Image (cartoon, rainbow, N blue to C red):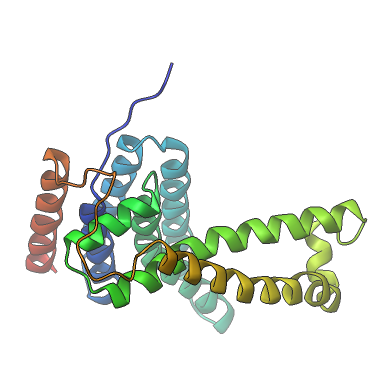
Length: 232
């Protein structure tokens, strides 16, 4: 039986990323941070990604626990450094969660259609399109290189990559850099051939419009931002 999940418009997901960025840049109470991370966890569940949301949510509470246990014992540089890592990663995690939620179950073509509806200039849409398609291709190239290395008995485990940095540079980083150049050129050419640079009106097979859940999400974010600044 096919699983059902709630879909969100890319524009409401973009608002979620912007709110997470404000949460990172401006001082908000810790309670507001907990509520926002909990909201993101609920959004992952609604979007049909319970496992991914549970991993992020558990990681957040592990970072909170680490800060709680270390903070009373900050009396030297080592404990202060590790506590800084816990707090810093905890502060960055909502932005990472919001970005993961935004990319979850959203096709690149849907993002392009949404950006066009927002009247984003084509000079910005084309680089973003190439960027969105570049990293998945780069990860696929990395997996292919790793499989080829394991097949030949080179750096079979992940630990070997760190134990032999020069070998890692020779067999992974150099091919990745060479592949990245060719991939970027191919993607740029494909974007132009498909007419993304045409300034005239474009059509899309994806129906992009804000639904009830999108308005509800945007409203929650606005109210949360106002309330967070009031109690902050």
